[in-house]
Amino acid sequence: MKREIRNSLDDVLEAFACESNTGRATLEKYLRDFPEYAEALVDFAAEISWEVAPRKEPLSERELNMIEIGWRKHVEAAPKAVVDPFVVLTHVQLANVAKLLEVPRQVLTAFRDRTIVTASIPKRFAERLAAEIHSDVESLMAYLDTPPTLSVARSRKSDTKPKIAVCKTFDQVLTDAGVPAEDRKKLTSND
Image (tube, rainbow, N blue to C red; front, side):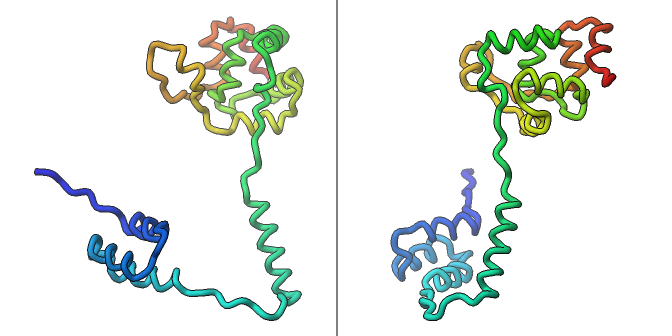
């Protein structure tokens, strides 16, 4: 028995709004195809057909202030662009940074791929890393706080299907990279 999948009300209203002509013929077609949404379709069609009367007088000072306040709130609430501080580094530069920080390269790869739990990164190490990659700690941490993503270029080089990256603590990344316990203790210290 084949089960019919029905569109949601939001899907139907969105499709209706995208029609080049939302006149009577189109409305009737949607009413025939989606009778369960008849009332919402009629209300929506009426709402989008209303014409906005042009305003003859200029906006008042109060209205302009309200628009300005609303716009400032919108701008402040918008997410800030996060810059990838690793994107400018060549493989050689990344290897040099790893050497200067005394960590295996795969540790920096975990940073670049954002697979480290940021709360587990010692402040001292974050400061050293930021300085070596010519960034600041705030920008570095903002980048690391964004979700990890798969790199299409890197995933094409593998014979296995790419998986969603699992975030690990800084100490676990060091352990997985084979960093000896004594060196891990120095790297995870904030002294």
